[in-house]
Length: 461
Image 1 (tube, rainbow, N blue to C red):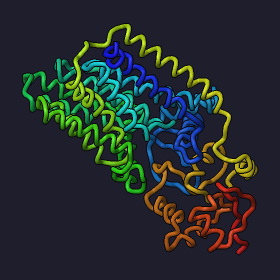
Image 2: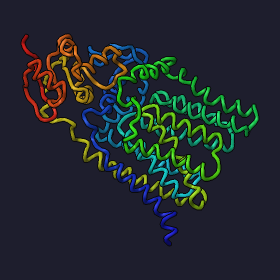
Image 3: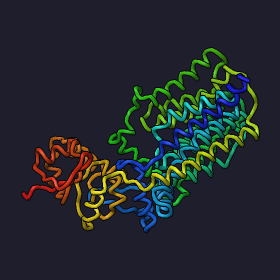
Image 4: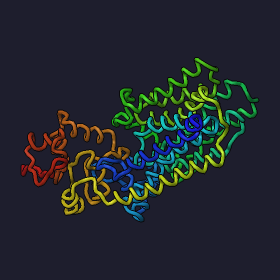
């Protein structure tokens, strides 16, 4: 009985507990969440913006840019129109819930329930910083799918040409389609090094990631699909999430532990085959690349961790219909519960009522110097305003990003930059550097405020 509980019941209970925690965490995004930026852009694309020649969000951004996640943004905007913010919370939450469930199902293809659950829970924890109402969650699910399919291909060496179609469909949802190409390339190199198939079959397999890298030109953006990815890369230095990973973060530590377990397992048991070595190396490379791609690493490493843990317990066969039905029921119950949570929390605002009232009263074209975080919410909720700062960096030139960062951090020329903006108001955090600089150093006047935001007017001079 105890053995049954540990090997069969406990893994499903652990999966259910993980989903409960994820459901409880779903809420209206904070004012600084990128969700508001995506909702605003979705509104613009639904309103007639061209994909190849999109517009700008205010007079303070002027970069030539191309959208890398326009279909996701349109979907989010349509969901908000149909069901309000509750619909956005529910949609984002369902995508998040699919990841641990998908991890468990993928791992069960090769391992027993216990190592599958441990790997899925660990992978979910390591990837948790990426769980938000953003299109990137779609990429996480597709990375899991592509990794799973290539692990199948390593074993049977059957070319699955439909992966090219997946790559094509991925492009308008999010710019991480390049990760899918990298997974295919790593698997093919591993198969080549292992010398387990003839040249003709190897060339067929190699054609899949190659075609996956080419098909973006067949999407509505055409060749600009590459420009959308390159444009973000050019601004990486300005973004914290694209900075080097923080190995004091619990989530990054979890990702590092996943790597360590796979390596230690290989040293104490059978040596890793070449495809596994290449996928492990790819996961480590993405994990070291940036804060944001540690999540990519965790997803790629999850099935590898499960296979390493399998060496410690007896195998019990593949997932049967009964277990699959239980997993499906757990996911369905979590999805329904999420609907109630979203409905309860969907009418909340991330800012105090007076903030929206003041911004609503401002006429179209009013120029507002804002905190970076407030710019996200205000960009969607108050589209008539010309906001100086927000986090959708694609639309800013590098000089404009440096200007915004300089103002926010009170760089040596920040006061001249503020004067050149010639704004009508400022809405900032009173405890921020910019809030201090405007009130104490430049003499701006407070109109209304609280602990989170203060509305200021510039001196008459």
